Image (cartoon, rainbow, N blue to C red; front, top):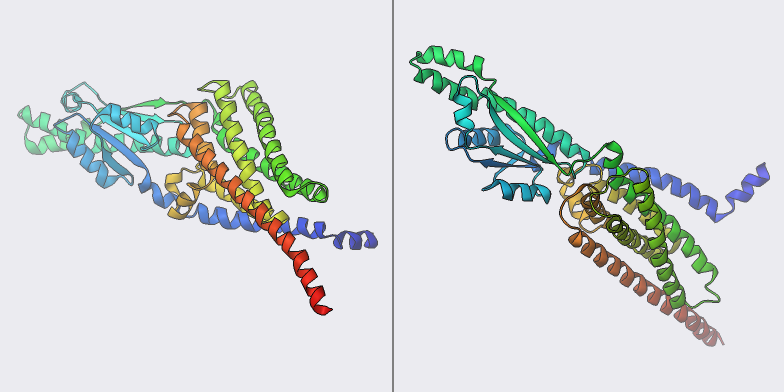
Amino acid sequence: MKTAIQAFMKRPTTWVGIITAFMFQIIFAVIWMTGYNGVTDRVDQLRIAVVNEDTAMGQQIAANLAEQLPFDIVQSTSLEEARADLNEREVQMVLHIPASFSEQAGKPGEQADLHYYLNESNPALIKSMMSSAASQITAEVNRTAVTMGIQKTLTGMQMPVDQAASTAPLLAERVKGVVESSNVVEGMNNQMVPMMLVLASYVGAMIMGMNLEQSSMATAASVSKWRRFGTRAIINVVSSILVSLVGAALLVALGGQLDHGFLYLWGFQCLFLLTFMFVSQMFLFLFGMAGMLFNIMLLSAQLVSSGAIVPRELLSNFYTGLGEWLPATYAVDGTMNILFGGPGVSSDAGMLVAIALAAIAISAVAVFAKGRQAVRQPEVAIASQRKDK
């Protein structure tokens, strides 16, 4: 056994495996602990659009909400505009105060409605936080705005002001919150699909790239560098088509939610998987097998910054900015649109194409530079031998 251990420890691959295990722990701990640090302190980055059509009490209600709630309260001129922003994920909830709110709140025996609109095509945390906010807003309006309306009504009934003020809070439970959700997500299994697709796709791309790098090194003596580069690109394209077909087919076969058609999902998954392949292999072209350490870092960074788990609005400026340069952000956004509903994916697809082209260009430069370096080394050796003579 001792001899076997010594034989294993003499192999560089053994040490690479051990170091990789350490790096996974270090990289994931550092990135996840810093990425999710202070998330609950940034709820003021979540936006609630208020559409106020009530000229009596609506303005006071909106003003009170801006002072009392930890969210960013913005005014919207129309319900259609606010719901369009909600669908685009520009705001996280819409509060609609109808024109008849004050009148209904002031009438004995009637109940006024506050309308809330949620977009479930978001990380699950958004729905949870906004549902809680809707309950909080309804309670706040009951304690303040409705009390004002009922107090005014009682005063108008010739009830003394002091008695009206003490009676009004007892009648303040007059507001009902009506929540309407769009792009409804059917179950936690569907909610987790965007993160699952990104994780499976990038890890698969990493491992595939590592094996292609080993195959490239093994054939270096018989195949030119550009032929190897082109062959890897062809393998990437064909593999992305076939792998994404299997992934999309399994997702649908297992009851996955699909707002758009199957071909839509297949095509988009093929695109971001291909982008992952080119990006992960870019580091291998640049640094050889050591590039896998960069891929481990990129995997962790993308899971944090893409918005698959925690909304990007709650991340620090560093990770929010970082996510704009990484493909997983656009993969998650587009996948949510296709699976659950939302705007089109043309913008996300365009960014993925741009990132893939940039990765291909950088990889080509790395191949060219390494080729020149390989040519210069024999020339330097020959010049050194001539000098010695």
